[in-house]
Structures are given as C-alpha cells and as structure tokens.
Length: 237
Image 1 (cartoon, rainbow, N blue to C red):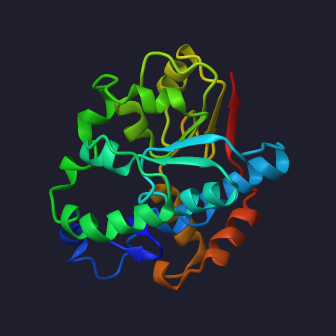
Image 2: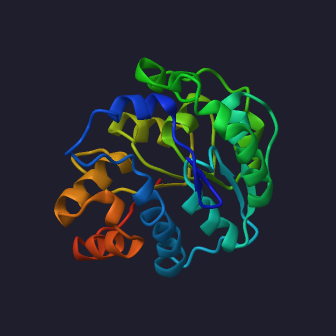
Image 3: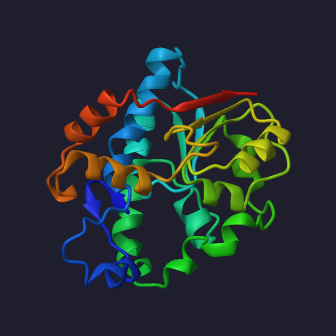
C-alpha cells in the first residue's frame, strides 16, 4: 500500500516471497500507479466525462494511490474509506494530506497484522455482510476501488451510480445490473467474460517486457499497454 510516495509492505506478503530468488514478484502496484491513472484520463478525454465536483467514494486509497491522486487532480469531492472499509472505523477522510497523516501513523501497525483481518480473502470475497456503510455508497456519484471491498458492503440498490473497479466476473456484472447502476468501468479489459486483478495483468506485462519489475518505469508500462491497444472495459446499463 502507498501514500504520498511511501510504500508499506505487509509482513505476511514478505514471508510469502522471502525465499523467491529468480522469478519476478509483483503485486499490481506498478500497474495501479500507471494504468489506473490513465483510465481516468481516458474517460475524461475519450468519453468527455467531467469529474469536477463529482462525489467520489474510494473504498481504499492507499491501495490505489494513483487513482486517488488523479481523481483529486480532476477536482472531485473525495471520500477516502480506508478507515471505514479496512478497519471498520466509521471516519471518512477527505484529503490526500489527511490520508497521508493517517497512513504514517497506522500503516506500520496494520501491515504487521494477519492480512485476512484487513482484506476479505477466500470465501469472504463472495459474501456481502450487509449495508452498515450504505450512506457512503448512496452519497457518492462514483464508487471506485477494489471490488472485493466494494462488494462486501454493497447495498441492495445503487441507482444511477458509476463503479470504477476490476476483478469482476459475469455473475458480479449481473448483480450490479440488478442493483441499478448506470455504468461499470473496469480498469483491466474483458478476458473470457471477466476482468483480472492488476497483479495478474502486471505479471503479464513484466513477462512480456523481459525486464525485472524493479527496473520498470511508469513509461515502460504505458508503452507496452499502448502497443497492446489496452483500453478499459465500459459497460453502460
């Protein structure tokens, strides 16, 4: 996770890869910092979408800091739900400066906790636990970020909302349609009926590049994406 250019790594993840010596290891953050910025610019440029003054709920900004920064630059009215959705603390953050102060205070602590306490894993990813946070969804024009966070607390109705996310299946899309959303944008494209996480797509790009991930720049990612005619999936309901 990131905030203001500072990276915080989960202890569980470091344990998982500590003996990996040859195979490149990626977590999707390199792509989030490039592709997800470009997707928002793409929507503004190609679809003439205006974000100025729009209310945007980002369920977790430290997970997608590039997206958070780009939305902020577009003049949106932001709600960062990192405390709400990550720690179940009903406090909304409204600026990147506040987010950074909070991240510096608590990120070194929470990254030492078991990962499943922070993020829905396994069967929890397919289960909604109710709408305790419904007001945050209903107040937003755009709901953005990790789909597992979004889906875990999603209310029954989201009429007229735009969702910007990824890692959705056919079943997820059908469910969102029934909830009345206006548009679904996935930052990664449709591959056999679903979109994959940024970690999977980043691994693909690193393999195609032949480079080590630590040597790749944002420009390298964008160049490969351009050659592949990579574009977001946009579904208007």
